[in-house]
Image (tube, rainbow, N blue to C red; front, top):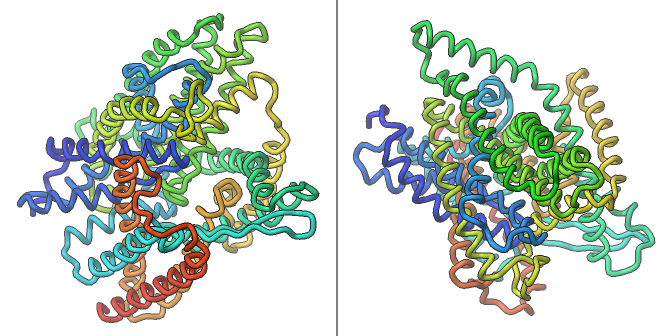
Amino acid sequence: MTQSRELTVRAILLGGVITLMFTAANVYLGLRVGLTFATSIPAAVISMALLRAMANGTILENNIVQTVASAAGTLAAICFVLPGLVMVGAWHDFPFWTTALITFLGGFLGVMFSIPLRRALVVDTPLPYPEGVAAAEVLKVGDSGNKAGLAIIVAGSLASAGYALLAAMRVAVAEATTFFRIGGSATGISAGLSFALLGAGHLVGISVGVAIGIGILIGWAVAVPILTAGVPGPAEQVALTVWGDQVRFFGAGVIGVAAIWTLLSIIGPIMGGIRSALASSAQRKGGEALPIHERDIPIGIVAIGILVALALIAALLATQIGTIGNMAVLIAGSLAFVVLAGAFIAAVCGYMAGLIGASNSPISGVGILSIIAAALLVGAVAGASADRAALVVYALTVTAVVFGVATISNDNLQDLKTGQLVGATPWRQQVALIFGVFFGSLVIPPVLSLLNQAYGFAGAPGAGPNALPAPQAALISALAKGVLGGTLDWRMIGYGAIAGAVIVTIDMALGRSGRMRCPPLAVGLGIYLPMQTSLLVVVGAVAGWFYDRWAHRQRDPDGAERMGVLLATGLIVGESLFGVALAGLVVASGSAAPLGIMPESFAPTALILSPLLFAALTAWLYRRARRSALASA
């Protein structure tokens, strides 16, 4: 097959069609459970299935399709902020053009801000990019016809999807959880039985996995027991309430300090990437031909795009001023915030995606820090006499734009890593990312409007008993009101910032001694993310470490290690595809458990059998990967 076909009309249109399904599913899941799923790998699989039927499809064209679809699907995380405008009573529905413009401008700036970061965070970096690597492996295996590699991906996918199906049927459990008291304190252990998380752990590696494990221990073995001491009530209720209301903000403080330190530690490579982009632009003007893998969108066009987007944001914010006053100063300060916070967040979110994967990156933590900063800025500029309700609306609007930057930069660099591994042209992929943002901004407003009209949002005026909880939007809107109303408790964020500084110091000492590092952001993730999301990542990292130790003793260590990567890829692929299908069933049926066939009385039995089944499947899959590696050597 010729490899010249890349940014084609059919690739853009196919990505747009896949966008409809993934974006709608992600919006619904984000509003129901506060989580979204990464769409790049499912998009790559679907694209391969469709383009293989066409004689002249290429791996590069497949890459463009998954780039468009994953950008649009990721942008659906804007549902973590925009419903807050309905919850505070500012909007009664989602006006199409306003919602689309907020969504598109944030996503477009995310693409623009991440372009100068490509060299620093994708090319010249040791970051593992688990989902980017997995997507590239899917594309490579599908393109090369590697039967052994394809077989191990299929085996992992079937086992992953099969277990997810059993969980959806309530034959197995999706997580194993127990809460208990130690003296007068409450805590718990919760493990999400997810093969996708296990595969992500294998790909991120032992250093990140151990750091996340340390974060889990800090959160659940130290902070939660201390803060629940003497608090009456059931252990589960007390532990979860304290974690949600206090420990999570402690984790956000750790993430904030770790994010600042991360930016400071990578500012040199980032500036080098910008200088390289400027040098590439000068080479173009001088008539020199750049290597294909160095051709980004020219930095001059990036600058013009940012300025145009800022002008449109200024016009948008002018319509949201209401009775606040100080229009010129407020808009100027907001634009400066969007630029500075957006550039900072693009770098940090890109780094986090490279560290642990876009699915597990704590975007909601970025949203928490963004709304706090935006509310402080708006309150300081507007003054004490301004209408507090209008300030909340304005702060949520600014945060929505910045959040769009965060979601897209979180995904973009993962996609660009996939592109680098399959030999894509960066500028073509960056154009595809813009198309993905465009498609997503068209799909998200009607989906939000439909769900608002069908269910409503918990806490919004007139919400009914079946209202979607929209937990992240509820938290962010509550924070805006807390900051601007003077009712936010800053203690836990401050304690987290102190802990973050200590963790950064320890990591620096480990680096100087030549020992295994303890990435501060990963520690913050372990504290901030729910344990059912993060614990299996730790287990996967340990399992991957044992497998890689075995692989390094084999005759073909690289081939053996690659088989482990392919297994982890399959684990992510299977559950991701099943998640898309299940989300469609949930939306179509209106039931949270459309496949559930077992009664609630079976749950205790399932809780006993499920960990055993999960462990047995894991052991069988790794043994199969080892046999395949030995047979292929």
